Image 1 (cartoon, rainbow, N blue to C red):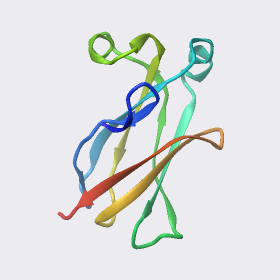
Image 2: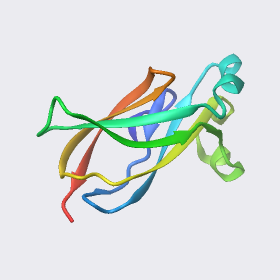
Image 3: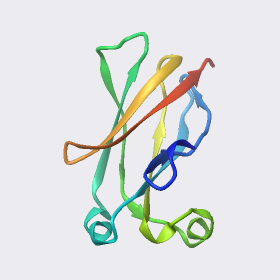
Length: 116
């Protein structure tokens, strides 16, 4: 996982240029904020290392509860939520991926997009 279990993380997967891939993020929150976040829209943006000043929209998603099978394997699952998005990186190299809810950043991860 990119990030930190218990806070915010992106499940490691292969990001491949011009290939659509589904990716899952997990977010651990205070129990009193969990219901408030479910269903909220997440905006996913990215900055490629070669275009440092050009932030691109990469996807959108909705925050959801964990599936039963996920809850069995995710640490502290009672406080965890998730969101999934299909991302197609247009360029290879390192990407700084930011996720936002209502213009407030949820977290940032760095992932490598491989060539075709």
